[in-house]
Structure formats: C-alpha cells, structure tokens
Amino acid sequence: SGTMTLDVPELRQISQDLREMNNYLSILRKEDHLQNQWCHVGYILDFLLFRVYLLIITGYALVIICMWCIWMNQ
Image (tube, rainbow, N blue to C red; front, side, top):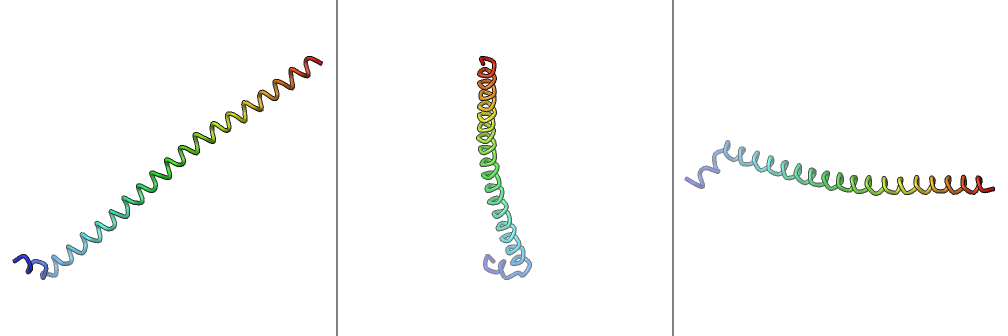
C-alpha cells in the first residue's frame, strides 16, 4: 500500500506542488534574511554618518566662534 500511494497521479502532483512551495518559501526566507541584513547595515551607516555630520557642524561652529573672537580682539 505504501508504494502504491505514490503511483496515484494526483498524489504525485500534490507531492511535486508541495516541494515547489517549500522551495519558494525557502527562497523567500533567504531574501527576507538578506533584506534584514541590509537594513542593519543601513542603520549602522545612518548612525555613523549622522555622527560625522554632527562633528563637522561642531567643527564649523568652533571655527566661526574662533574667527569672531579674533575679530573682536583686534
């Protein structure tokens, strides 16, 4: 009976469909994992670039303040 169940065309088709769905879901899981990794990279870059931006703005403000102080002392 166990070997005869695979000889039924409908069951063979169902088995093939299930394998295809499993492969498709596996691909979706891999793509989702890859997307999550890229989002993590994006968050890290966002964090670092914002810090660099703050440092540049702070440096610019310090230069302006120093130039103003020098101008006021002359």
